[in-house]
Image (cartoon, rainbow, N blue to C red; front, side, top):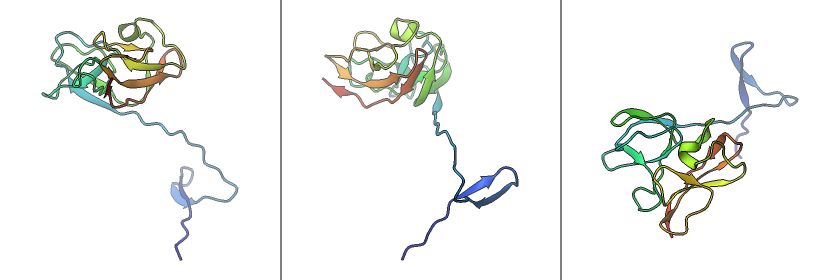
Length: 157
């Protein structure tokens, strides 16, 4: 027979681990956000919120759903990244921005809409899935300022 595993918690009051009692519940919020620093290999500045891909030289540049290499979204720029400088790229979790104009053409997101990498313009997201080039879903708007990043592998249309 297998062993019974009893759940344990760290009690912040006593500073010790203890068994969870039958009448106790755990309240927790699971949140994971991955952010990496990457250097820009772009010819121009990368704006906050813009989707990027990793180039062969390990630098990032604006992603676009028109070619296999550029359609592989790595994440969204967490800040403006000047040419030749390094900056933070968020790869998952909730991405929050007060102004999405540089990425969607509108200040706010459309709540409940899925956002895809744009095939026509580098560094842009659209609520209309591309019909040519590559399809890469980047996330879903959970509020006017928050995009739940769930970057999918792109596929050729």
